[in-house]
Image (cartoon, rainbow, N blue to C red; front, side):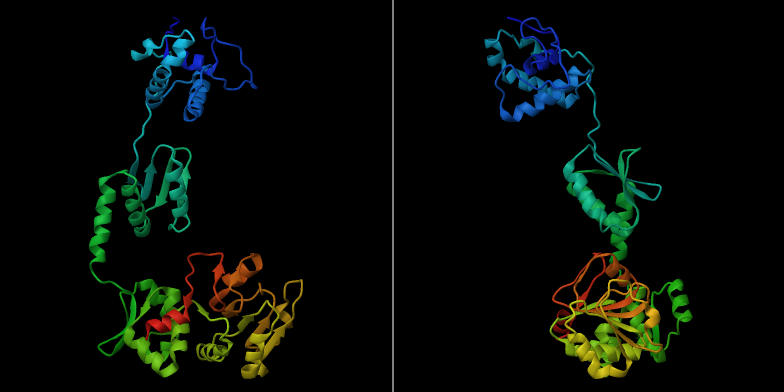
Length: 398
Protein backbone atom coordinates (compact mmCIF):
# COMPACT_ATOMS: atom_id res chain seq x y z
CA UNK A 1 0.00 0.00 0.00
CA UNK A 2 1.22 3.44 -0.90
CA UNK A 3 1.54 6.13 1.80
CA UNK A 4 2.41 9.84 1.56
CA UNK A 5 4.23 12.13 3.94
CA UNK A 6 1.97 15.19 4.03
CA UNK A 7 -1.77 15.72 4.19
CA UNK A 8 -1.39 18.10 1.24
CA UNK A 9 -0.03 15.14 -0.79
CA UNK A 10 -3.21 13.18 -0.16
CA UNK A 11 -5.33 16.15 -1.21
CA UNK A 12 -3.43 16.47 -4.48
CA UNK A 13 -3.61 12.72 -5.12
CA UNK A 14 -7.40 12.66 -4.63
CA UNK A 15 -7.74 15.72 -6.89
CA UNK A 16 -5.64 14.11 -9.63
CA UNK A 17 -2.76 16.57 -9.25
CA UNK A 18 -0.31 13.76 -8.30
CA UNK A 19 0.17 10.26 -9.66
CA UNK A 20 -1.61 7.87 -7.32
CA UNK A 21 1.20 5.28 -7.43
CA UNK A 22 4.40 7.28 -7.61
CA UNK A 23 3.24 10.50 -5.95
CA UNK A 24 4.86 12.48 -8.73
CA UNK A 25 3.24 15.84 -9.35
CA UNK A 26 1.53 15.82 -12.72
CA UNK A 27 2.01 18.59 -15.22
CA UNK A 28 -0.85 21.09 -15.28
CA UNK A 29 -1.96 24.02 -17.36
CA UNK A 30 -4.38 26.89 -17.18
CA UNK A 31 -6.97 24.69 -18.88
CA UNK A 32 -6.64 21.69 -16.51
CA UNK A 33 -9.72 20.84 -14.49
CA UNK A 34 -10.48 19.12 -11.19
CA UNK A 35 -10.73 15.37 -11.91
CA UNK A 36 -10.79 13.35 -8.66
CA UNK A 37 -9.52 9.75 -8.79
CA UNK A 38 -12.35 8.52 -6.53
CA UNK A 39 -16.08 9.17 -6.37
CA UNK A 40 -16.74 12.18 -4.12
CA UNK A 41 -19.98 13.29 -2.54
CA UNK A 42 -21.37 16.33 -4.30
CA UNK A 43 -20.84 18.60 -1.29
CA UNK A 44 -17.15 17.55 -1.02
CA UNK A 45 -16.25 18.32 -4.64
CA UNK A 46 -15.96 22.12 -4.35
CA UNK A 47 -14.16 21.87 -1.00
CA UNK A 48 -11.48 19.49 -2.29
CA UNK A 49 -11.15 21.46 -5.52
CA UNK A 50 -10.46 24.68 -3.57
CA UNK A 51 -7.98 23.02 -1.21
CA UNK A 52 -6.12 21.23 -4.01
CA UNK A 53 -5.77 24.43 -6.03
CA UNK A 54 -4.48 26.28 -2.96
CA UNK A 55 -1.84 23.78 -1.81
CA UNK A 56 -0.74 23.07 -5.38
CA UNK A 57 0.02 26.77 -5.84
CA UNK A 58 2.02 26.92 -2.60
CA UNK A 59 -0.65 28.40 -0.33
CA UNK A 60 -0.95 26.99 3.18
CA UNK A 61 -4.27 25.77 4.55
CA UNK A 62 -5.93 27.46 7.50
CA UNK A 63 -6.39 25.57 10.77
CA UNK A 64 -10.09 25.07 10.01
CA UNK A 65 -9.37 23.86 6.48
CA UNK A 66 -6.80 21.44 7.89
CA UNK A 67 -9.33 19.84 10.24
CA UNK A 68 -11.81 19.52 7.40
CA UNK A 69 -9.16 18.04 5.07
CA UNK A 70 -8.37 15.29 7.61
CA UNK A 71 -12.04 14.37 8.00
CA UNK A 72 -12.62 14.19 4.24
CA UNK A 73 -9.51 12.08 3.53
CA UNK A 74 -10.35 9.59 6.29
CA UNK A 75 -13.95 9.45 5.11
CA UNK A 76 -12.78 8.05 1.76
CA UNK A 77 -10.16 5.63 3.17
CA UNK A 78 -12.03 2.58 1.80
CA UNK A 79 -12.15 3.93 -1.76
CA UNK A 80 -8.51 5.00 -1.55
CA UNK A 81 -7.48 1.57 -0.21
CA UNK A 82 -9.06 0.03 -3.31
CA UNK A 83 -6.72 2.30 -5.31
CA UNK A 84 -3.74 1.08 -3.26
CA UNK A 85 -3.43 4.12 -1.01
CA UNK A 86 -3.10 3.88 2.80
CA UNK A 87 -4.41 6.99 4.63
CA UNK A 88 -3.30 5.97 8.16
CA UNK A 89 -0.56 8.69 8.30
CA UNK A 90 -3.35 11.28 8.25
CA UNK A 91 -4.32 10.23 11.80
CA UNK A 92 -1.10 11.88 12.96
CA UNK A 93 -0.89 14.59 10.32
CA UNK A 94 2.18 16.33 9.04
CA UNK A 95 1.90 19.47 6.97
CA UNK A 96 4.03 20.54 4.06
CA UNK A 97 3.50 24.19 4.98
CA UNK A 98 2.75 25.70 8.42
CA UNK A 99 -0.98 26.14 8.86
CA UNK A 100 -2.36 29.65 8.71
CA UNK A 101 -4.01 30.78 11.95
CA UNK A 102 -6.97 32.96 11.04
CA UNK A 103 -8.63 35.53 13.27
CA UNK A 104 -12.29 34.50 13.39
CA UNK A 105 -13.28 37.04 16.02
CA UNK A 106 -16.18 39.42 15.40
CA UNK A 107 -15.66 42.81 17.04
CA UNK A 108 -17.58 46.05 17.54
CA UNK A 109 -15.61 48.86 19.16
CA UNK A 110 -15.44 52.68 19.33
CA UNK A 111 -12.37 54.50 18.05
CA UNK A 112 -11.92 58.16 17.03
CA UNK A 113 -15.67 58.85 17.37
CA UNK A 114 -16.35 56.05 14.91
CA UNK A 115 -18.08 52.69 15.27
CA UNK A 116 -15.72 49.99 14.00
CA UNK A 117 -16.84 46.52 12.91
CA UNK A 118 -14.37 43.73 12.18
CA UNK A 119 -15.28 40.16 11.26
CA UNK A 120 -14.22 37.36 8.91
CA UNK A 121 -15.81 37.35 5.47
CA UNK A 122 -19.53 36.57 5.59
CA UNK A 123 -22.03 37.36 2.84
CA UNK A 124 -24.84 37.46 5.38
CA UNK A 125 -23.12 40.01 7.62
CA UNK A 126 -21.98 42.13 4.69
CA UNK A 127 -25.46 42.26 3.17
CA UNK A 128 -26.88 43.24 6.56
CA UNK A 129 -24.51 46.22 6.82
CA UNK A 130 -25.09 47.24 3.20
CA UNK A 131 -28.83 47.31 3.84
CA UNK A 132 -28.41 49.37 7.02
CA UNK A 133 -26.07 51.77 5.23
CA UNK A 134 -29.04 53.04 3.18
CA UNK A 135 -30.64 54.49 6.33
CA UNK A 136 -27.59 55.14 8.50
CA UNK A 137 -26.50 58.61 9.59
CA UNK A 138 -23.27 60.12 8.31
CA UNK A 139 -20.30 58.06 7.15
CA UNK A 140 -20.92 54.38 6.48
CA UNK A 141 -18.17 52.68 4.51
CA UNK A 142 -15.83 49.72 4.09
CA UNK A 143 -12.23 50.64 4.95
CA UNK A 144 -10.24 48.54 2.50
CA UNK A 145 -6.87 49.34 4.04
CA UNK A 146 -7.81 48.25 7.56
CA UNK A 147 -10.40 45.69 6.40
CA UNK A 148 -13.25 46.90 8.57
CA UNK A 149 -16.60 48.67 8.35
CA UNK A 150 -16.78 52.19 9.79
CA UNK A 151 -19.89 54.16 10.78
CA UNK A 152 -20.17 57.65 12.25
CA UNK A 153 -20.87 57.56 15.98
CA UNK A 154 -24.47 58.75 16.22
CA UNK A 155 -27.20 57.65 18.59
CA UNK A 156 -29.18 55.99 15.79
CA UNK A 157 -26.16 54.15 14.36
CA UNK A 158 -24.96 52.94 17.76
CA UNK A 159 -28.33 51.62 18.95
CA UNK A 160 -28.95 49.77 15.68
CA UNK A 161 -25.45 48.34 15.25
CA UNK A 162 -25.16 47.28 18.89
CA UNK A 163 -28.42 45.34 18.63
CA UNK A 164 -27.34 43.87 15.28
CA UNK A 165 -23.91 42.90 16.64
CA UNK A 166 -25.38 41.21 19.71
CA UNK A 167 -27.73 39.19 17.50
CA UNK A 168 -24.73 38.05 15.44
CA UNK A 169 -22.60 37.19 18.51
CA UNK A 170 -20.02 39.99 18.19
CA UNK A 171 -17.64 40.89 20.99
CA UNK A 172 -18.56 44.46 21.99
CA UNK A 173 -16.16 46.78 23.80
CA UNK A 174 -16.92 48.51 27.10
CA UNK A 175 -17.11 52.00 25.55
CA UNK A 176 -19.93 50.97 23.21
CA UNK A 177 -21.88 49.39 26.06
CA UNK A 178 -21.34 52.47 28.22
CA UNK A 179 -22.63 54.85 25.54
CA UNK A 180 -25.63 52.62 24.89
CA UNK A 181 -26.48 52.63 28.61
CA UNK A 182 -26.29 56.44 28.65
CA UNK A 183 -28.70 56.62 25.69
CA UNK A 184 -31.12 54.26 27.44
CA UNK A 185 -30.96 56.37 30.59
CA UNK A 186 -31.67 59.60 28.69
CA UNK A 187 -34.61 58.00 26.88
CA UNK A 188 -36.29 57.32 30.23
CA UNK A 189 -36.74 61.08 30.65
CA UNK A 190 -39.38 62.62 28.35
CA UNK A 191 -37.69 65.10 26.05
CA UNK A 192 -39.25 66.90 23.14
CA UNK A 193 -38.54 70.06 21.20
CA UNK A 194 -42.11 71.28 21.09
CA UNK A 195 -44.05 74.43 20.25
CA UNK A 196 -46.42 74.95 23.16
CA UNK A 197 -47.97 77.49 25.52
CA UNK A 198 -46.38 77.57 28.98
CA UNK A 199 -47.90 79.89 31.61
CA UNK A 200 -49.71 81.76 28.87
CA UNK A 201 -46.51 82.37 26.87
CA UNK A 202 -45.77 80.81 23.49
CA UNK A 203 -42.48 78.94 23.64
CA UNK A 204 -40.50 76.15 22.00
CA UNK A 205 -39.43 73.85 24.80
CA UNK A 206 -35.86 72.49 24.69
CA UNK A 207 -35.07 74.46 21.51
CA UNK A 208 -31.33 74.83 20.82
CA UNK A 209 -29.92 78.33 20.37
CA UNK A 210 -29.35 77.79 16.65
CA UNK A 211 -33.05 77.04 16.13
CA UNK A 212 -34.17 80.17 18.01
CA UNK A 213 -31.70 82.30 16.03
CA UNK A 214 -33.19 81.00 12.78
CA UNK A 215 -36.76 81.66 13.96
CA UNK A 216 -35.90 85.20 15.06
CA UNK A 217 -34.23 85.86 11.71
CA UNK A 218 -37.29 84.66 9.79
CA UNK A 219 -40.02 86.09 11.98
CA UNK A 220 -40.62 85.96 15.71
CA UNK A 221 -41.87 83.70 18.46
CA UNK A 222 -45.34 85.13 19.05
CA UNK A 223 -49.01 84.31 18.62
CA UNK A 224 -49.14 86.78 15.72
CA UNK A 225 -46.64 84.59 13.89
CA UNK A 226 -48.26 81.26 14.83
CA UNK A 227 -49.06 80.27 11.23
CA UNK A 228 -45.40 80.48 10.23
CA UNK A 229 -44.24 78.74 13.41
CA UNK A 230 -46.55 75.78 12.76
CA UNK A 231 -45.41 75.69 9.16
CA UNK A 232 -41.72 75.63 10.19
CA UNK A 233 -42.20 72.67 12.56
CA UNK A 234 -41.60 69.84 10.02
CA UNK A 235 -38.69 71.78 8.48
CA UNK A 236 -36.83 72.56 11.74
CA UNK A 237 -37.79 69.30 13.43
CA UNK A 238 -39.90 70.37 16.40
CA UNK A 239 -43.37 69.09 17.29
CA UNK A 240 -46.56 71.03 17.91
CA UNK A 241 -48.36 70.79 21.25
CA UNK A 242 -51.75 69.07 21.25
CA UNK A 243 -53.56 72.16 22.56
CA UNK A 244 -52.17 74.30 19.73
CA UNK A 245 -53.06 71.66 17.16
CA UNK A 246 -56.62 71.39 18.44
CA UNK A 247 -57.12 75.18 18.56
CA UNK A 248 -55.66 75.70 15.09
CA UNK A 249 -57.72 72.87 13.58
CA UNK A 250 -60.88 74.25 15.15
CA UNK A 251 -60.25 77.74 13.78
CA UNK A 252 -58.81 76.88 10.35
CA UNK A 253 -59.91 73.29 9.74
CA UNK A 254 -58.21 69.88 9.98
CA UNK A 255 -56.82 70.05 6.46
CA UNK A 256 -55.04 73.34 7.15
CA UNK A 257 -53.55 71.86 10.34
CA UNK A 258 -52.54 68.71 8.46
CA UNK A 259 -50.82 70.73 5.72
CA UNK A 260 -49.10 73.02 8.19
CA UNK A 261 -47.68 70.27 10.39
CA UNK A 262 -46.24 68.06 7.63
CA UNK A 263 -43.68 68.64 4.90
CA UNK A 264 -45.00 66.00 2.49
CA UNK A 265 -48.64 64.92 2.47
CA UNK A 266 -50.90 62.70 0.39
CA UNK A 267 -54.62 62.99 -0.33
CA UNK A 268 -56.71 60.35 -2.11
CA UNK A 269 -56.32 60.66 -5.88
CA UNK A 270 -60.08 61.05 -6.43
CA UNK A 271 -60.56 63.96 -4.00
CA UNK A 272 -59.48 66.83 -6.23
CA UNK A 273 -62.07 69.12 -4.60
CA UNK A 274 -59.74 69.36 -1.59
CA UNK A 275 -57.49 71.52 -3.77
CA UNK A 276 -59.58 74.55 -2.79
CA UNK A 277 -58.54 74.11 0.86
CA UNK A 278 -54.94 73.48 -0.21
CA UNK A 279 -54.92 76.79 -2.08
CA UNK A 280 -56.55 78.54 0.89
CA UNK A 281 -53.70 77.22 3.04
CA UNK A 282 -51.15 78.49 0.50
CA UNK A 283 -52.74 81.93 0.57
CA UNK A 284 -52.68 82.13 4.39
CA UNK A 285 -49.10 80.89 4.52
CA UNK A 286 -48.15 83.02 1.46
CA UNK A 287 -46.58 80.03 -0.28
CA UNK A 288 -46.48 81.42 -3.81
CA UNK A 289 -46.12 80.41 -6.50
CA UNK A 290 -47.97 77.13 -6.12
CA UNK A 291 -46.83 74.72 -8.85
CA UNK A 292 -49.41 72.13 -9.93
CA UNK A 293 -47.72 69.20 -11.69
CA UNK A 294 -50.25 67.16 -13.72
CA UNK A 295 -48.27 65.01 -16.18
CA UNK A 296 -51.15 62.80 -17.39
CA UNK A 297 -52.62 65.75 -19.40
CA UNK A 298 -56.11 64.98 -18.07
CA UNK A 299 -56.34 68.58 -16.78
CA UNK A 300 -58.75 67.45 -14.06
CA UNK A 301 -56.75 69.27 -11.41
CA UNK A 302 -56.43 72.34 -13.61
CA UNK A 303 -60.22 72.36 -14.00
CA UNK A 304 -60.65 72.45 -10.23
CA UNK A 305 -58.12 75.25 -9.82
CA UNK A 306 -59.67 77.20 -12.69
CA UNK A 307 -62.91 77.42 -10.71
CA UNK A 308 -61.23 79.02 -7.71
CA UNK A 309 -58.20 80.90 -9.02
CA UNK A 310 -58.88 81.61 -12.70
CA UNK A 311 -57.26 85.04 -12.82
CA UNK A 312 -54.05 83.98 -11.10
CA UNK A 313 -53.47 80.71 -12.98
CA UNK A 314 -50.79 80.25 -15.64
CA UNK A 315 -50.86 77.03 -17.69
CA UNK A 316 -47.60 75.82 -19.21
CA UNK A 317 -48.05 73.41 -22.12
CA UNK A 318 -46.09 70.21 -22.65
CA UNK A 319 -42.83 70.59 -24.53
CA UNK A 320 -39.55 68.78 -25.00
CA UNK A 321 -37.33 71.59 -23.72
CA UNK A 322 -36.96 72.91 -20.19
CA UNK A 323 -39.67 75.43 -19.39
CA UNK A 324 -38.57 79.04 -19.72
CA UNK A 325 -39.90 80.70 -16.55
CA UNK A 326 -39.35 84.15 -18.09
CA UNK A 327 -42.57 83.52 -20.04
CA UNK A 328 -44.59 83.40 -16.82
CA UNK A 329 -46.26 86.78 -16.12
CA UNK A 330 -45.15 88.59 -12.99
CA UNK A 331 -47.40 88.12 -9.97
CA UNK A 332 -48.77 84.72 -11.04
CA UNK A 333 -49.52 82.70 -7.94
CA UNK A 334 -50.53 79.35 -9.48
CA UNK A 335 -48.60 77.57 -12.22
CA UNK A 336 -50.07 74.47 -13.90
CA UNK A 337 -47.59 72.33 -15.82
CA UNK A 338 -47.45 68.92 -17.50
CA UNK A 339 -43.64 68.74 -17.39
CA UNK A 340 -41.20 69.16 -14.48
CA UNK A 341 -39.97 72.67 -13.70
CA UNK A 342 -36.27 72.63 -12.87
CA UNK A 343 -35.25 76.27 -12.52
CA UNK A 344 -37.65 77.60 -9.91
CA UNK A 345 -37.76 77.54 -6.11
CA UNK A 346 -41.20 76.12 -5.29
CA UNK A 347 -42.79 77.04 -1.95
CA UNK A 348 -45.63 74.54 -2.54
CA UNK A 349 -45.72 71.73 -5.10
CA UNK A 350 -48.98 69.91 -5.87
CA UNK A 351 -48.53 66.68 -7.85
CA UNK A 352 -51.08 64.27 -9.27
CA UNK A 353 -48.23 61.81 -9.91
CA UNK A 354 -47.15 59.49 -7.13
CA UNK A 355 -44.20 58.07 -9.07
CA UNK A 356 -41.54 60.76 -8.81
CA UNK A 357 -38.43 59.12 -10.26
CA UNK A 358 -36.07 60.54 -12.88
CA UNK A 359 -33.64 63.44 -13.00
CA UNK A 360 -36.05 66.27 -13.81
CA UNK A 361 -38.67 65.18 -11.26
CA UNK A 362 -36.01 64.72 -8.59
CA UNK A 363 -34.66 68.22 -9.21
CA UNK A 364 -38.16 69.65 -8.92
CA UNK A 365 -38.70 67.81 -5.62
CA UNK A 366 -35.42 69.16 -4.26
CA UNK A 367 -36.51 72.73 -5.06
CA UNK A 368 -39.90 72.30 -3.31
CA UNK A 369 -40.33 73.40 0.33
CA UNK A 370 -43.60 71.50 0.76
CA UNK A 371 -45.23 68.83 -1.42
CA UNK A 372 -48.87 67.76 -1.69
CA UNK A 373 -49.67 64.56 -3.58
CA UNK A 374 -53.05 63.55 -4.97
CA UNK A 375 -52.21 59.89 -5.66
CA UNK A 376 -53.00 56.32 -4.64
CA UNK A 377 -49.44 55.89 -3.40
CA UNK A 378 -46.17 57.80 -3.44
CA UNK A 379 -42.73 56.63 -4.57
CA UNK A 380 -39.75 59.00 -4.60
CA UNK A 381 -35.98 58.66 -4.87
CA UNK A 382 -35.54 59.30 -1.13
CA UNK A 383 -36.79 56.72 1.35
CA UNK A 384 -36.25 58.97 4.36
CA UNK A 385 -38.80 61.54 3.19
CA UNK A 386 -41.93 60.53 5.09
CA UNK A 387 -45.22 61.25 3.33
CA UNK A 388 -48.14 61.72 5.71
CA UNK A 389 -51.52 60.42 4.53
CA UNK A 390 -54.60 62.47 5.32
CA UNK A 391 -56.87 59.41 5.64
CA UNK A 392 -54.79 57.87 8.41
CA UNK A 393 -54.28 61.21 10.17
CA UNK A 394 -57.98 61.98 10.31
CA UNK A 395 -58.87 58.49 11.48
CA UNK A 396 -56.35 58.86 14.32
CA UNK A 397 -58.01 62.11 15.33
CA UNK A 398 -61.42 60.41 15.46
